[in-house]
Amino acid sequence: MKGFSQKNKGFTLVEMIITLTILAVLAGAVIPLAKVAVKREKEIELRRNLRIIREAIDAYKKLSDEKKIEVEDDTEGYPPDLEALIEGVELKEGNEESDTKVMKFLRRIPKDPMTNSYDWGLRSYQDDPDSDNWGGENVYDIYTKSLGTALDGTKYKDW
Image (cartoon, rainbow, N blue to C red; front, side, top):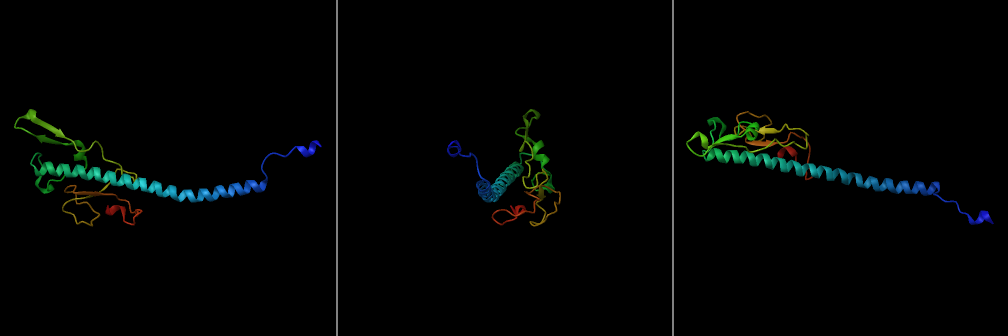
């Protein structure tokens, strides 16, 4: 009688295989979604970093157009390089030396999330719009050097 009242506790091999199969199917469905989520986050960061740098370039250009900073004639009023946005420029508000202030546009150069580096593609005002080679005269625009394609089908370097 004792043998009939006790049941074996635990899972059978068939139950374990079925459970593992269901888990594998669910994991297989989640992995592509996770990859898309990671790619979307990188795209958001890329857009944000491009906007930050472009706004700094625009602020530099605005001060140049207002004649509040000294610029060389061949730069068209754009910064000579990205370091100029970090180091800043002298902003003169009066005629005396004590009125001189340093205007900085960026704390640091943001990282390109697509290439995982601080090396951005640069265009000068004198370059062709589709050129991949920077002329070195000034920094008119910036783009990523990634050759990848975004979720919307566009190329990252065209952003």
